[in-house]
Amino acid sequence: MTEPASQPAAAAAAPGPDALILELGKVLQQLGRNDLAGRAAVAAARLRRPSTIVCVVGEFKQGKSSLVNALLGQQVCPVDDDLATSAITLVRYAEQPGAIVRRREDGKALADPIPVTDLQQWVSESGNPRNLKGVERVEVTVPSPFLKQGLVIVDTPGMGGLGAGHAAATLSFLPFADGLIFVSDASAELSAPELEFLRRAIELCPTVLFAQTKIDLFPNWQKIVDLNRGHLDRHGVNIPIVPVSSSLRTAALSRKDRALNEQSHVPELVQHLGDDVVGPAKANATTRSIDDARSIIAQITAGLQAERSVIDDPANAAAGVASLEEAKSRIEYLRGPGAKWSVLVGDRITDLSNKVSFHLRGSMREIQRLMDERVEVLSKGDEWDELARYLQTVVADEVTNAFVSLEQGRTAVRGEVIELMRDEDLGLSDRRSVVNEVSISDLWQGKALDQVVAGGKKAFNVGLTTVRGAQSGIMMFGMMGSFLPTAAGVLIASNPVLLGVGALFGSIGLAEDRKRKVAARRQAARSQVRQFLDDVQFEVNNQISTVVRDVQRDLRDEFGDRLAELLRTFTEAATRAQQEMQKSQTERQARSKQLETALAGLTKLDAAMAKVNA
Ligand SMILES: Nc1nc2c(ncn2[C@@H]2O[C@H](COP(=O)(O)OP(=O)(O)OP(=O)(O)O)[C@@H](O)[C@H]2O)c(=O)[nH]1
Ligand SMILES: [Mg+2]
View (tube, rainbow, N blue to C red):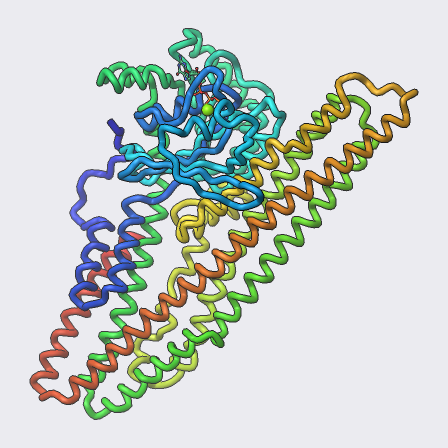
């Protein structure tokens, strides 16, 4: 049932990136390098299925959950006239259907597996009124072919109602999404808040699509689409509008009715997702995977070349082996806890964590000050509502900034370590030795990757490109869950403290003659705001510590693994060279020939890969 996202161009003569990496995998197996073959397999998997996050957002009851189901081709997210979606739901591919509820109980983070059929009890207002169960998000896996290409679809609670709370919370994770489907039904034109949301969303997310839903229900839908096009143009929002009907799509799928499927326009939306979201993600994944594969080739080549130069130059064999041993001990040292890079990771990550927390504390204090000023002149209940919306928005902005800074900081630290690794090798490369033929420092590739930027985007977006998509650390380290500030989002969107303040003021104007009462209420409002800011800060700081711990561990693992591979490469080269030196000249010549062939094969493979990334 799935529509192919973007068909590759007609079969070209040159082998594609998949085939090249597959071939490299075979070579590595033959060389007995299971460790590197494993890394090549990861690169190949990323190529086949680059992870991309697409969020489905919109006001209440516009048909978001229905659209998610229509895209999936099965009823996964609960839909109803009165059942409002109340929790963020991530849907991704797996052979087996399943679901995990992530929630808090007495401050403890829980992850409970539940049957998919029980979703309604967790993600809807009726099953979990006022989120008493403390759900932060639900992660669902389904074997839907639509998701197989690596898409993660996120169904979100409707915005509105509670003020801008949900909108603000949703905006706070948009920097981490690759695409956004904004949903508004064809019953009416876009409202002012919807337009305002879209205007901000296009600054935070690279691809925004507008799905105008329920066109089966509203015969006038084309007129609404035209009016909305005008509104969007006037607001400078240039995004595709796709009119869709989830009901027609569902009917078409169950009746296997092709014409009806076209009429639902859902295939058009799928096409847009393929071209505008999955396509670019695939391109990024290809660049990364090929770069990874090439760094493997560089390393293997270095080992084989070192061995060959020892064999070919028996007079200098001892010196050759000695310099290989030196390379080994240098790498051993780098693997130890005292190595500069290891210390640097620890220091920089601590600095980063402090910097982000400090900034957050400062901005919360500033928000508190501004709020105090505004509360001082507050006189009506509905003014409070507006103020609360403002508060939620600025707080969500600061939470977004904190997470974006974390990811940008991670990228910077990684770049710095790569730089340091290159420098660490200078001592070796200065010496005239066989290992010098291939400098170890050349093996630290990947810096350029961190500087991948999308052309033509706004300056802010350029900074954000590193935090999302298949090339980002979030995906690389499987940290998507901890990076999406959903817990903070839930807190911002539906904070009982904030909701209480509205009631405090009521909707009646506060008469001057009740001055004392007014002062008391203002005082109460100020302390409620302080409580809210404290709660958010506490929650975000908790998440920052988790993320920082993960980042530090993953960076150490990444470079530790690379060093272990390198050590093995040079150890094996030294051992084999020594063994060869014991053998006859004919045997040595045969080995030299073998190495020459292997090296020629690797050079050819590398050249083909270079072309892919050119
Ligand atoms: N006729 C028709 N009805 C639809 C369509 N899409 C959604 N609906 C109906 O609209 C209502 C709301 O749909 P949902 O998918 O739950 O909307 P939602 O945006 O997820 O709602 P919240 O999560 O509560 O904000 C349900 O009664 C759906 O059956 C459509 O394409 N055609
Ligand atoms: Mg819903």
